[in-house]
Length: 447
Image (tube, rainbow, N blue to C red):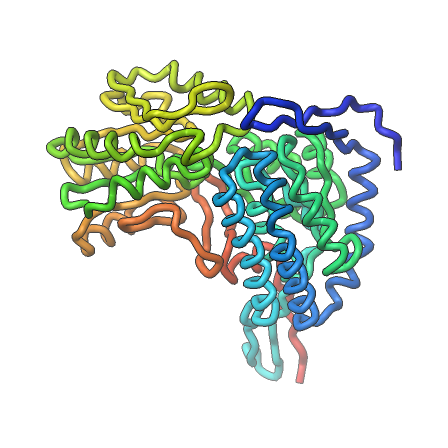
């Protein structure tokens, strides 16, 4: 392996701003060597029966659960999440590996039959090869599992590149994967954005990326003819009708402040009817006042994200800006509502990625729906009403890959998640995600 001359990257604890370690980013030689080891391991992993892959993925889930405390500490160090939040996500990671362990044995239903006279045809679903998974800092281990678990279950080997600020838990997962799955079946390649660019242009067969729209477009251009699966940013509309249930306000406050609002599918834009506007604003203000930064949720992840949040807030023309109690020092930002703002306000059009909600209004439900669909992102949305028929009609017409009724950010391994438009394409979660990492081969035999 080449000796790196790259300067070390300082890793910072977002809770304190103090340096917690250093990282030497991988460069061309290390990237090529890691990918070559993954390619060498691919035939052996692919040749395993689904039953054996299931057994090994279950063993990896066992290791994650057995080391829950260690993973939790690593996630907290890189993200600043509260302990209960981080531990809950580790449990989800173990559950994902167990889910896809079983899915490996069900696979994709093949088409088989006599479609031509005198011939029998069927379809084989085969792994693509080596998958490069480039994952973000907002859910370091969970987003790695979203990408790695189905890719591995489908028979691929994976090189995961964690975000520059949060390499810790991916390194531990790779060590446990070597023990449970075999050497080089799942490897971690820590580094910066240049490391990611080198990995995308290396000898990989598919790039699975979760992150910003700008970075996703760059990766798609660099990937060339290779398969790309993109889960990009969101800017989720929330349609609140006058008959919204009583739990609406607390549920939206919880969803907006979970992970300090650093979720692609977090509620971002509340849109209500004009006659109900002041009631909605007052109800949300009261609910937000009970969620405190530093007590109920963590800080923003890094100085760049904090600066971006501050820039959008400063550029907003909102006439009302209400902040909840909580820490405001360092990378901490309190829960905030922006109201009386134009429809083309930066806080409306851009993904803020923080504990902030804008509140807009429209004369009719149809016009509210038009506002909801007026941004390029189309990842997630929610509708809040006691009228199920109205809710179903609105969710059918919302531009979103995932929509909720009277809830938000409710997800499980069994249900697919993915974006449209500027929010990318491809599928995470559910058995449908297996096809992201497989390709069909038609076989026809003359009888």
